[in-house]
Length: 122
Image (cartoon, rainbow, N blue to C red; front, side):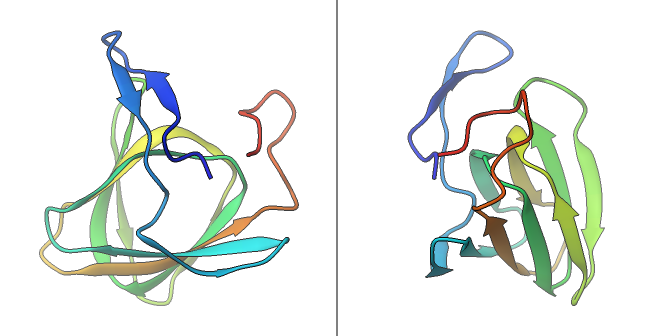
């Protein structure tokens, strides 16, 4: 986990990264499973993924992924039951920009680590 890691934002400001979810619901040496629960307008704070991961949407929502590096935000609709795979990711935050609660399980694949040249696994 990288909670507490300090990174530099696009304007030179120091940003303390948070966790990728609100609560760990399961963990062993291979995987870590997070609960992500956001009401409309709520944000998951700036964070970074150090492992490839799956997102399993439990309750659908319209979300925005905003990269810390100042790049353009990406709007995504996550439908209930949808599963997506993502590699490790640079620092970003997730905002529920919709009108419904968003819930998901985020499954970090700890034993895979990061690809060559990526952020180091922690």
